[in-house]
Image (cartoon, rainbow, N blue to C red; front, top):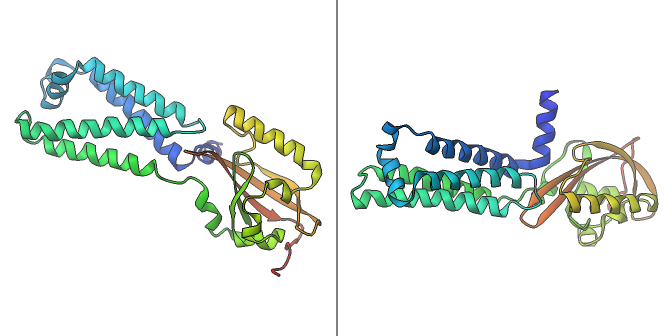
Length: 255
C-alpha cells in the first residue's frame, strides 16, 4: 500500500517535483535552525556573518518562505518561481560566505561558500529538466505507443510504436489534437477532462490503467489500454500517454 502510494505520488510530481519537495523541506529545517540557534551557535562565524547583514529572524523568514513556496508549487502547473527563489537564496548564501574570506571575517568561508554555490547550481540545473518531452523517445516494453501532448491536448511528439499503431507519421501527427486517436463518443468527455485539469492543476486519472477503444487513421477501431500521467513544466501541464493494443491487436503496418 505504501509503495503504491509513493509510486503514484512520484508519477504525479515527477523528478522536478521530488527535488522541489527535498529543497522545500531542507529550507524549512534551515529556517528552524536559525530561529532556535542557541547563544553558543550564534557566536559561530556563519551566524555572525549573516547577523551582520540582517537579523537572523529575517534570514529565517526568507528560508521559511522559500520552503513553503517549494512545497506548494510542487503540485501547481508551474514551479518556475519556486526554483528561481531557491536558486537565488542559495547563490546569495554562497556569495556571502565566499566574500567573507576576502574581508577576513572567516578565512575558511570559501569552503562554505563553494558548498552553497554548488547546491544553488544543482537546483538551477534541475530547473532546466524537461519533465515529459523526452519520454516519447524512451523505449517501452511490449510495443507500447507513447504519446506526449500539451495542456490543450495537442500532440507534441510520439514514438515509432505510435506511428505503427495508429497509422499517422510523426510529421502528420504532431500538431494534431489527441481526438484523432479516439472515436467520436469519447471526445466530449476527453475535452471536459482536459478542462478540469487546466482548472485545478491535477488529474484524478494520473497513473490509472484505462481500457478504451483507439481509432486508426483508416477509421477502424481497436481495443487499447491507456495510462496517462500529467507533468508540471515551465510551460504548463504536459501529458504522457502509454498505449497498448489489447486482444492481440497490432495496429497498422508501416506504409
